[in-house]
Amino acid sequence: MGHELIVLMFTWEFPPRIIGGISPHVYYLSKNLAKTGTKIYVVTCDFPGAPKYEVIDGVEVFRIDSYKNPSPDFATWVYLMNVNMQKEAAALVNSLDEPVDIFHAHDWLVATASIGLKHVFRRPLIATIHSTEIGRRNGIHLDYEKMIHETEAWLSYEAWRVICCSNYMVSHVQWAFGLPADKMRMIPNGVEVEPYTKYKHEELSSFRSKFALPDEKIVLFVGRLVYEKGIHILVNAMPKVLEKVNAKFVIVGNGYMKEQLSNIINHRGLAKKVIFTGFVDDETLKKLQICADVSVVPSLFEPFGIVALEAMAAKSPVVVSDTGGLSEIVEHNVTGVKVYPDNSDSLAWGIIRVLTDGMYARLLRDNAYKNIRKKYDWNIIAQHTKIVYEDVLREYSRSFWA
Amino acid sequence: MVLFDWTWNNKGLRAFYVVKRMRTIILSWEYPPRIVGELAEYVKKLSLQLAKNTVDVYIVTYHDYLTGVSSDLEGIKIFRVTNPVRTHIGVLTWVLTLNQEVERATANIYYSNNKQIDLMDAHDWHFIPAAITIKKALDIPFIYSVESLEEHRSHGANSPFNMAIKSIEWLGMYEAEKLIVKSEWMRDEVLRLYRVPLEKMKVIQPKSAGWIKEILETYNSLKRSIPQHGS
Image (cartoon, rainbow over all chains, first blue to last red; front, side, top):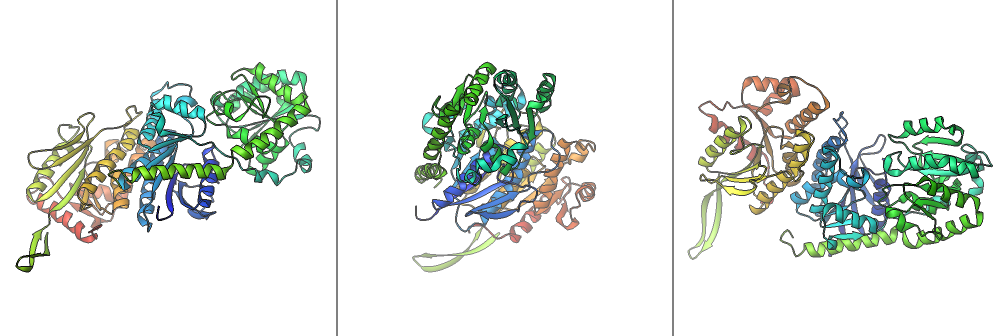
């Protein structure tokens, strides 16, 4: 390629707008791609206080008007937001001196904007599928869900390559949308270790005391309080854990199950042992992850499981359910503990195991820390992504669109 | 439109004129054989008259299964697209996932005509998102031809669903070079509801004698105001 590779990324979330895992994923991916000499434009939704345009570590970020009128439902809002996103991205591409080489879309939330621009500018589209409706809902039951499922299928159909973050997701996406194997690429998610090295475990005792008594072990859950994240499995495991260990359960995140869960907790007389923090800022989250005596990821459906990697980066031992991407991240008894999914007895066993054996916990977290630095480094992930871009452009140059 | 051009032949340099035909893309969610309301017949009549007046007419429209390119006896080319998302919860989501196929068809017309398209004429709100994207991306101006408004169709309802359609109508009126409305009453309603400047609107009554002449004048006025892309 004679010139610098130019990529336009579509994402519905980008820091400071953080809803799920796509936001940090696109942030670190684009930042590290920029280091490889790839020019990245990010087109994303606006956020209160964030500028319409800014340059972050060489990445040019454009925040569009994300349709702030009331919407009949979430999916309709997504499609309406995409009208604005497509309009503004079209003007942006048209205003650049050099043509954009590749459009890169993250999940169905930006499907319509990216598919339209692919055809209008006749440039290749690459899609990263982070998650699927059929996985999130454990099946397709309603027309609303089917519509989203079909939109995901359409995006994967229009994409030149489909990237997934785990081998599990590659096979899941192939099955869900009937895609050929040679269209798929597995590139794992990454984690940055540096932000965690700012804080020392010993210096966090006053921070820790805000959440737990000195003799209470901290069991940390980070995630949306929704069915697929398996938070209800953890709630069911709580009494069993408390029989053996004096622990405090810290639940970070929000979701539709919150009220129901706190009712169950109050009813069982566990209120003193559980803290719901809601959504917390980045610094608090990192400190909590460092203070956690065990980090629990009891998901029923987990495409990747970035939370487990973050816990490993924070040197907290992890207990995960043996499902999806988590199965690939954790090696049982080496880098963490795997328990049976959807099984609170098994989960309680795993938590107790880690909390009652200090030597074992230390071994797990040291192994895990070494492993993530080797396998989940964003520099390496960015280079793998760039290879996908270059392969696609080589094939594209022989197509009639070129 | 008359243009001067020149060429070399065995007698040396020769200047001559060429008549450059206007090329327009009409976006309409209904076109025969698919007839929902009055728009289908109107767009058919409009394209026939345009074709008679040396305008190259391309229709981009929807049909559930009669998809692809066809051409009728008068030389009008019709691109019918369907919705890749088969399951929907209402007309709004249906429209919003159909627009990408409209964009694909419109872009195909643009690229196969050496990027020479003079303008688009979008009828009602359904394909406004596509018209706006094509305008921004490929510098093709568009006219918004108003057949009806959500305010009247829904009898003034203001649910989030109606507001979304109204916001698309507003966006179309904002981004269009010009609005063609079919009566003075409609012009006043557009002014009342969306505050579109009067000089941006042209009242052309379909039953009036000079109807097609006025349409052609409006098309031509647009062509001159926008520099040709890639020419």
